[in-house]
Image (cartoon, rainbow, N blue to C red; front, top):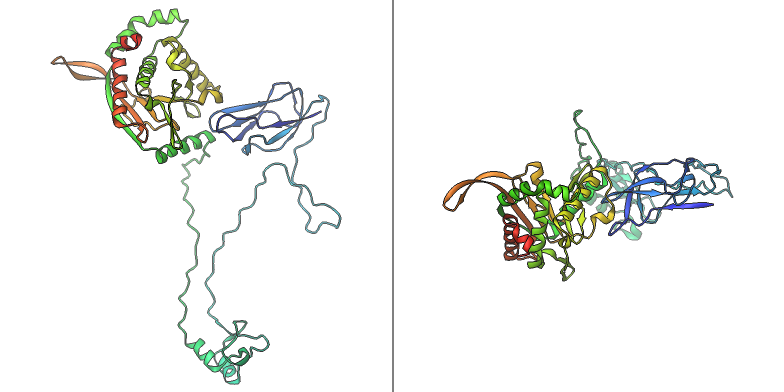
Length: 429
């Protein structure tokens, strides 16, 4: 029995995908739930599996094609003994097919069409048009002599001013004495970009195109502003050094890092300043009474932001475990669509790459994002004395349409206070 292989539902706001790779080819026998094709969406790579065992008999779209949700990718014959049919090809149509014979079918997949030739206008010839030759528009004798003397071409140019539309001598003189039209320079195509043999041209992946589009969308649509502060990492580094080994033993290999402290500090601050955790929907502001924390992770294909759901309810160990799992999935390409949707606030840590300060860009439709940076020892005035302290610059970019400057600055101060004194996070004060 033939089974249709269709593009599945791809998740929130995703309506199409690109066929990245056909894992199976027509004629291949497949087992139930075995991967047939990889689809690359705006967010992750999705494998479409066989609903039952059988033979893949047809592929409707080649690799690189963009397909909509629900599109028919191919056919699977549930009879394991079925003979695979070859890929549909596009036969060359006859110039004049015999009467009564239908034209050959179009191929099922997209067909590359030859580019239309570029139309380049050519300068008009010098010979001008004057007298018509249609019946009833013949020139009068005096006009005919002028036409002959000046070698004016006779073609259809409209009726003259004489009776029945005949061309008069005045018409010919007016034509000969009119100003010559300005020459029209030929339009030339723009010169092609000169390629250096040392360059390499690579097509952008769908994920990279989507990242570019979303970042530009954030800049175009939001009234984005960034405020900065700095945090003394002395207390949290001391806490980590003192309890790191015990924490790892207690929680079966989960390591204690700085990220869980920042996540907890943000969750506490977001409850106090809910506008930072809200979003704009048309003319409404949607406030979230929960925190789904997005953590920016650099993967092989680009930056992705998996979401820790209900981060405000998790312990330090729960947060660190979720971050470690997402990091592994991002490196291995195992992130799912559900892992990347529903965030209400995000954190990005450019410090792991050595960034000292930056202005992070919003992750729409979220209204704010926290940027962490490199820890660097700097001289600080502490109690009237100069001390060397491990310091980190923090940045909060926010949508000024919904978050006021006072709220953004106060939010960042609360985060700073929570990180500089982690006891406040444990006591929820």
